[in-house]
Length: 304
Ligand code: TXA
Ligand code: MG
View 1: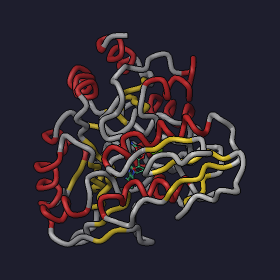
View 2: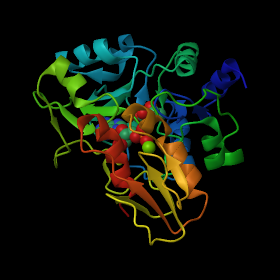
View 3: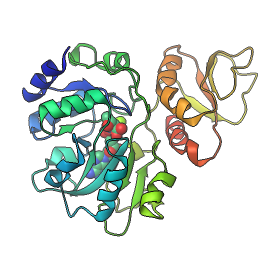
């Protein structure tokens, strides 16, 4: 499958599987309501959940958002292209299907070379949620997307293993003077604060809705338990550890480097989930800022 075949499909209003540096996305023309509707059908996602608009460069921001604050320009200059989504006030033409009927739009400029190439050749914006069925673990390699959708998604571009492996950091800048992290990511608070000064995190009742902020999300079928120590009496379990997998257990060690761990986490969850064990015991990573995004996803995976 070539880039130009994928772009032709997008022009016909089809949905494609697209690699980004965070996770693979289900991409379609953000200006075509039928195409965006098809994303929701494929994902099985409720229609009131907004999707992120992907642009080739920050230069296109003015076509999709209005009242863009100075803070957004500063973050864009520092971190785009990259794993950062900004929530801004939407331009009038942005489809309700894209915004979930809200007056805000989520915008991101991905840096994966394949995503960049597709966006530039397509010449427009791509609406793209993660390429998993609603509520399931996000895909970080092409084979994961094929496993989720099979024949229902004929075009999935190859982009290798995602470099980041966890979804983008979402920062809400839609309300003046209140920058807020709605979804933690590998681009952490310290990096954001180095540009903006102190920011808050966590949604308020007024925050735009974010699906990734549902308590239970990113969940494998096997029940996940976050544990301080592994229980030697548990049978038919798999483990996900920081240090080596102890004798007598079956599982995967992801190590003690949060970037390496985050990159490999979703593939490991999928692999262990496929073994049909009774539970997946996950050794809780340290409560440190560098682990925030990983801990966030593990906490959600353990919530049901
Ligand atoms: O890294 C990522 O962000 C990936 C890749 C494909 O770019 N995309 C992704 O999309 O994670 P998705 O749909 O799985 O999660 C997007 C999150 C959701 O929690 C959604 O609610 C939130 O972004 N979002 C999108 N537009 C929004 C808006 N206008 N207001 C609030 N949240 C928004
Ligand atoms: Mg998702």
